[in-house]
Structure formats: C-alpha cells, structure tokens
Length: 308
Image 1 (cartoon, one colour):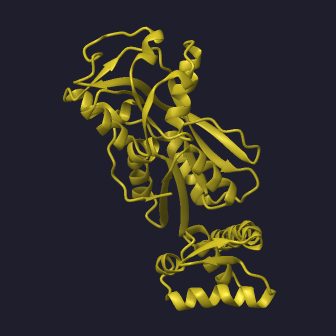
Image 2: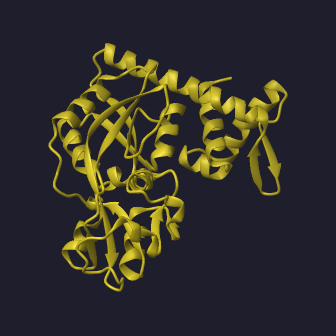
C-alpha cells in the first residue's frame, strides 16, 4: 500500500465518484480506478459497493477511510516538519471556516497574511460549524474558524472577538419600521433560517431560549444553506431572520432590510486546533497575525474557496 493509493482512495471515498476524484487529483479516471482496484485486490476485500452507476463505501471502506486520513495527515505533518527544519521558506495552510467568517471576516486577514508571507500557500474551504469541526477531527484542516459552540475534547479552542446578530425583516413585512419587539411576538411570523448545524442558528436558538421562547415554536418556512440565500429570501418575502450584521450591512444601508432591536448577544468566533497534531510555523504565524489584526468594520466576499 502506498501513500498515493491512499490519497486516491480518500478522494474517491469523500466524493463517492471516481471521475470527480480523478479530475480533482489531475489523474485519468482509469488511473484512479486502478489504484482502488489494486488495494481491493491486494487485501482481498471490496472497499466500495457498486450500485448501478453509483458507489457506496463498504464497512471495510469506512474503516480504511478513517485510518487513511490519519496516515495522510501524519505524512503531511512529517513533510512539513522536515521542510521547516531544513530552512525551506515555503508551506501550506489548510483553513476551514464557517460561512459568515469565510465570506465577510476572514478575507481581509487572508490577504494581509499572504502579502506578508507570499511563500505560504493558503487553501480555504467553507462549511458550517459542524462541518468545520469534523474537518479538524478528520485531519483535513490545519485551522478551523467557527461561530457556534462545539464540545470535542480533541480540539483546542481559541476565542476571538466576533460579530453581532440582528433581527431583520424586508419591506413587505408588517414589522418593517418597528424599533423594538417583545420576545413573545417572535412566534407570530414566519422565519427563514440557516440549516441546523450552522453557528448562526445555534446562537439564535440559544438566545431565544434565554428570552423564554422555545425555538421549536418558531414557524420556520425555509431553511437555507447560505447567508446570502437567507438574506435574499427575507428581502423579497414576508418572513424574518436573525443573521450576522456583517451579512446585511449593505441591505440595511440601502433600505432593503430593516433591523429591529432585540436583545441578541455579540458573539465570539473560535479558532480550532487539533490537540495532538504538529503545529507548523505557518500555522503559528497565521495565528499571530489574527491576534494582531484589528477587526474590520465591514467585509465582503473576496476570496475563492471551496464549499464543503
């Protein structure tokens, strides 16, 4: 078994698609298929169920995926440690971040770090809080940035100042123009919210409970997977949402949305590190730049990134 075979297997297993994995690895489909077949033949066990034109992991495949991710992460750590010990001024940093952070808070900091450290290659992947935490556990990310709360002993959490959530409605909503709202009235309108697992939703539901409102009693008419989709739906419809002020600043400024005063908390962001993994010089430098950089008053999507 080789690292290259494991790398190909992990790519296929994560995508459950040989062609997409081969494309992302800049390989031919036949080369990717051959690598998987070689592993199956060598150990006499199927790693994938072939169901019609699709594939699914077998029990052996699921077990190997966990171990293979760990092996590849340890190999990457070893390579990085040797590069740094030999004085090579280069490196790679894989960052996973939840949406508000990735789209509105992090771009300026990435750009600033890249200007100061042009030899460091940065890779950003966007997901929700739960997905970012899982990427850290699996070893797919060096650093994670989240908005919500997690409880995972293997991850170290570094708290930094974040943003503020606001209750907003569109022009057609009967609450448009109101300055304040009693918490008891929150159940009297439809809601457009982020999906379960997102930090924004988690913080809002915690705040609702603190105000004596059961989140299950809120009439959720739409659950959407991105902040921009939530903002657009509320601008054009008759529902309300609670969302980061960073996301809606422009809409509030131009009158497409109206903010209503509600006792919603400022929230901190958290940087995640794995407790047991090697901490590279690139990672240390990036953490130092985050701690030193002031928070910008507003942001806008400015980097190319993959969504998980």
